Length: 377
Image 1 (cartoon, rainbow, N blue to C red):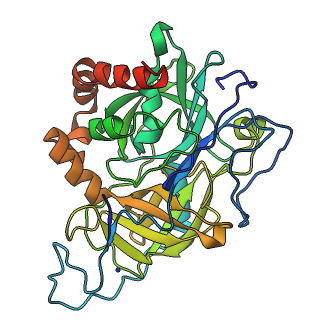
Image 2 (spheres, rainbow, N blue to C red; image 1 turned 135 degrees about the vertical axis):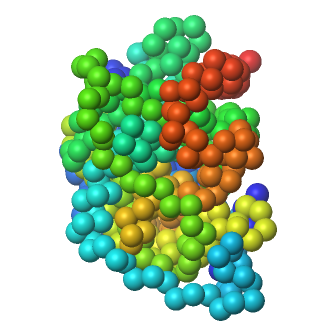
């Protein structure tokens, strides 16, 4: 528990918008007549559109009264800062916003998963970040779980997930699952069928690997990426850039054709831990990014490195009433080591080997867990 620290589916499939206790920010695709590109203004977040047919990933929402993370009060005890020291002054961004923005958007991807036909599964749109030039993508488990359902219930290629880039997003790459937290799957196996899914962000991470272009050709060039920062200096007041593919106000057709990247500069307002004194989760004020579809979006520091990914959102009547929660890259690395014995660096060095091992030994069981939960077996 958290403690506070201080398409392609047929466009007729209806998809539910995920909301979580910290509401999951992956967004069900919504197909409708609206054609709105949300990339510049703050607007009130929506829940399940009555006329929608495609869902987008929604940031998981954090319940206002059910605080699951422990807030770390200043001075913050981290590996770099002993508890007896004063909290250091947050670093001013060293790279101009325009440059940070361009770099982050080049590494940002939209993950679009669709189903062949109607049924218990809904298509979903979320975000992710490329973290190596050989095409490893970091995203949330509540998005990547769709990769475990490719041959859902014995139907070959029942679910297809594509990696999209650009603004507006367009189909660019195919990908496969490298690793997803088994703990998250075990603890959240009903998220895909819950009407109001909740989450804390704990264990909510996964790694994907680009396998080729959508036309079947290989990727011959190194892809743009954001290096990962494992620093524990996620200090209250530190400037961060958020970037994602928010889609909370778009219909499914618009998500397919007019899904734009959004980004915003903000500051960390609270830090949290799932354990004792490590910074595992950060909270930032509401921005244009505070919409469904932003799950897995990038949190980038002023030095151009990825410090975390968007995972959940607190509940509120308007975007101004909510805040985003992002799990830190350092937390993901610690949790990955605890679960698998490997680090992010290990995965980045040998993604093909990790992919083969995981999909041979672990993924089949996780797929069975999800399938049984969806079919209520």
